[in-house]
Amino acid sequence: MKILIVLAHPEPQSFNAAMYYSAIKTLLENGHEVRTSDLYQMNFNPVSGRQNFTSAKNEAYFSQQSEELFAYGNNAFADDIVAEQDKVFWCDLMIWQFPLWWFSVPAILKGWVDKVFAMGSFYDNGRIYDNGMLKSKKALLSVTTGGPEKNYVTTKYGSTNQILHPIQTGILEFVGFSVLQSEIHFSIERITDEERKAVLEKWEKRLKNIFI
Ligand SMILES: Cc1cc2nc3c(=O)[nH]c(=O)nc-3n(C[C@H](O)[C@H](O)[C@H](O)COP(=O)(O)OP(=O)(O)OC[C@H]3O[C@@H](n4cnc5c(N)ncnc54)[C@H](O)[C@@H]3O)c2cc1C
Image 1 (cartoon, rainbow, N blue to C red):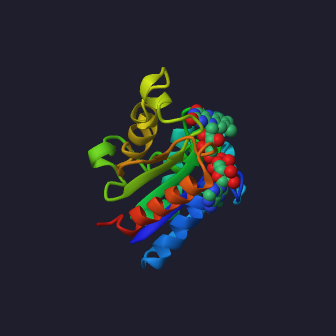
Image 2 (image 1 turned 90 degrees about the horizontal axis):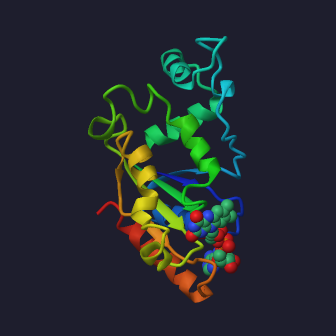
Image 3 (image 1 turned 90 degrees about the vertical axis):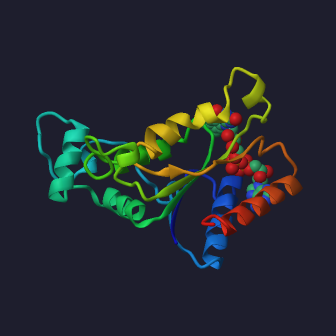
């Protein structure tokens, strides 16, 4: 199968990077095709604006969604967006590897979505959820947290289901992805090295059987 892995972490030696590299290795070893978007290493610019496009429908007033519709019909997306859109269209499964930052994805990943998941190409009137344009694809969120699991059960934080709901339902399912059970690892800086190694092993084991 074809898998796109998106990493949103600035440190190549981080635990998130370790999860990302172990996913690449495991999936390749199991005969899958893998493409990647290591957003910080790519120096991906997450800021949306006129730079998303190579030409404009309306030079006088910028409306991102109407420019996206125009760009879709006129091949007018900037190269960095075309490259990322192609990877998403190509994949059967998309994995996002990220640390939970302010109860959400890091801004670089949100900016990637803002630019890449364009109207006309990824969704349109009536082409959402069950009728979404990316309907045959699966997505998986692989997340680490600083906070311990109990905080997401007993405190004001809310559950991880609640926290990930806007990402799962407002982004991925919105454009048609089926979202698999999230891979969530809590307190990743506070557990022992052995426990982190066990997390990596569990992740590799899951990925070996991800399409079964
Ligand atoms: C802006 C911001 C907002 C945040 N908001 C939240 C929030 O809303 N909720 C929340 O819970 N937390 C929050 N955090 C904390 C954040 O989620 C954690 O810092 C993050 O999940 C830790 O993951 P990491 O990859 O950065 O860990 P790292 O610090 O990179 O790694 C943890 C440890 O793993 C070690 N390691 C690396 N590779 C391996 C390996 N192969 N095997 C074993 N060990 C390894 C590292 O050396 C390190 O000791 C926030 C942090 C920031 C910066």
